Image (cartoon, rainbow, N blue to C red; front, top):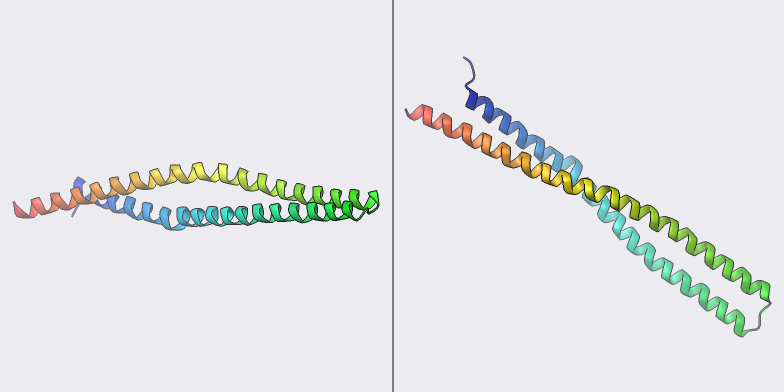
Length: 136
């Protein structure tokens, strides 16, 4: 009992459907979640960066109003600059990751859609040919 060509096409179509579903479940969905998590972290980081800058600016202003020694003011400015520089490095890391992964995600989504469409067509065509064969 050999397979007919349309039965092999149907089998191949089902394999494409399974492959597309597996790619979606095991790669695209986790990638999408990771991107969303990094965006949430980035948003929190941006908020913290603004707050830390405001805190240090207020501290510097209070030191200036209180006529604090110049070295205390310089120390507060140095701490502010170090804290903000730390966040800027993190901002760049997140931005690089986003640029790298977003393009990959888009391409893979198109591939999954194409595999799913082709698999559906092949499986449907194989089923139709099988029904036609049993009728006639």
